[in-house]
Amino acid sequence: MKTLCTLAVLGLLTFMATPALAIQTAPAEFLEMENPYDPEDVDRKFLKKAGKIYKRKCKKCHGTEGDGQGSAAADIEKPKPTSFIEPGYMEGKQDGQLFWITRDGSPKTEMNAFGPGSEVNLSEDEIWRVITFMRSAFTR
Ligand code: HEC
Image 1 (cartoon, rainbow, N blue to C red):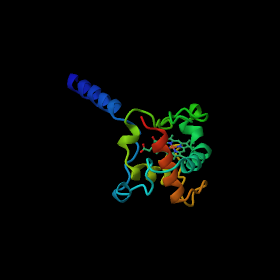
Image 2 (image 1 turned 120 degrees about the horizontal axis):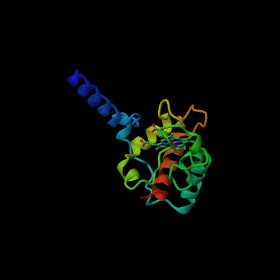
Image 3 (image 1 turned 60 degrees about the horizontal axis):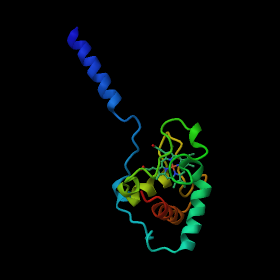
Image 4 (image 1 turned 90 degrees about the horizontal axis):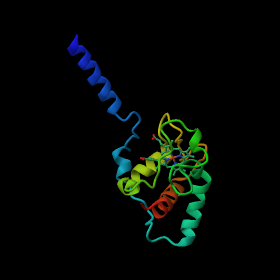
């Protein structure tokens, strides 16, 4: 009986320690992708235009500052909109991962697909542009 209890407690602890809804990792063919734009080598006009896509389509959840505190964030159950300004977050994400989630969404979350054919229907080029903006604006 005692062993059973210990096992049950251990099982529960393991269950609680497992992150419930970790974001999925993009398939290899996406992870290999490279952003056609270099965030350090685009001009202000480029960033301004790309920033507009972010403001119109991403800001209400991910926030003006990229902190995940947009106006719609409070009403979203877990998982909350990702904060892009956690130290190391942007650095730790490959271009292809950001591209894949933006294009295809994160299933069963508020992170919808934004790519071609979706409701918002961003082109793949627009997705790279918005990623370039994010890389340039959210640098922590
Ligand atoms: C309606 C709210 C909402 C909007 C609008 C939104 N997102 Fe998200 N986003 C989320 C949520 C919620 C998550 C967390 C999903 C998860 O943890 O599975 C997320 C996660 C992400 C991630 C994390 C990917 C990773 O691997 O860590 C990226 C990148 C992202 N969003 C980009 C965007 C971009 C770019 C836009 C605009 C084109 C956008 N999002 C618009 C809610 C939103």
